[in-house]
Image 1 (cartoon, rainbow, N blue to C red):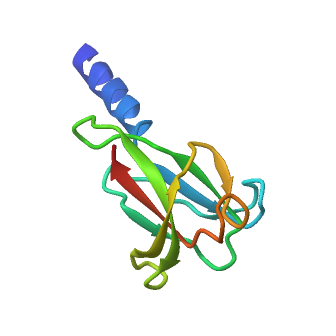
Image 2 (image 1 turned 90 degrees about the horizontal axis):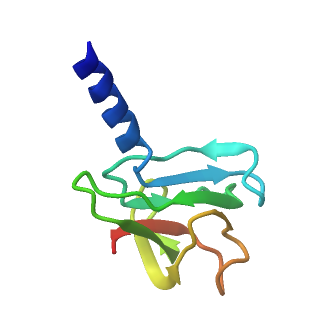
Length: 112
């Protein structure tokens, strides 16, 4: 019984360290559009109706820290990031229309 509880707590703790990029229809991270979170999350293309994204850096399965970087273009919905790398993004709600010099169309989770 104790072993089951410990394993459940460990799995829960690991779940909180997964990279997250949740897209929202409003610029203040309200009105959820799409949710993304996984240890294996890499490129997340922003839907054309998305105005903000809530980012949590997270870690790899091995516990290595990751961070989010913005890109000026995407190969298509569900594709990969392309264009100019716009820099490292903060771990919080980000207005993708105003944070960088141009609209962020894709975010990439990378090992730091």
